[in-house]
Image 1 (cartoon, rainbow, N blue to C red):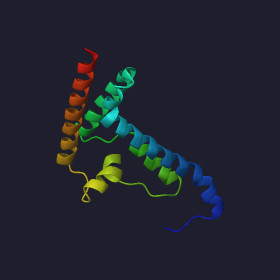
Image 2 (cartoon, one colour):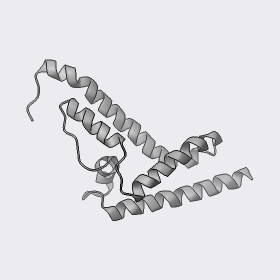
Image 3 (tube, rainbow, N blue to C red):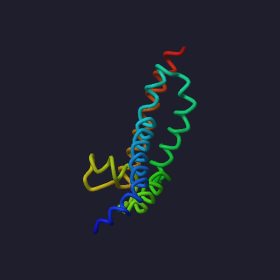
Image 4 (cartoon, helix red, strand yellow):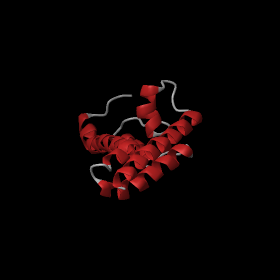
Length: 131
C-alpha cells in the first residue's frame, strides 16, 4: 500500500486515533467481562454493570458472533487509510497470541463455556461472602 500524501495522512489521523482508542476500550471491556466478577469483592455495586456485560460476552462467544465494535473499528481503519481485518476482535488480537491458526467455532464455544464456569465460581464465592 502506498502512503498517502502528508496532507491526506493528517486528515485521516483522527480515524486512526479513534480506531486505536476503540481497541483499548474493547480490550478493557473483554477483560471486564472475563474478570469483572472479581471486582465485586471490592465494589459490589458493579454487579449491575457486570451481569449485562457478562451476558453479552457469553452470547457473543456461544453464538460465534462478532461484537459490533469490531466492524466499527474496521470502518475507522479504512477511513484512516489503513487496512481492516476479517473475523472478530478476539480472533484478531487475542486468539492470534494464543492460537496462531485463528479462532475456530469449537475454540469459541470452549471460551464461552470457560467464561461461564469462571464467573459461576467467582459469583458463588462473592455471594458466599455476602451471607
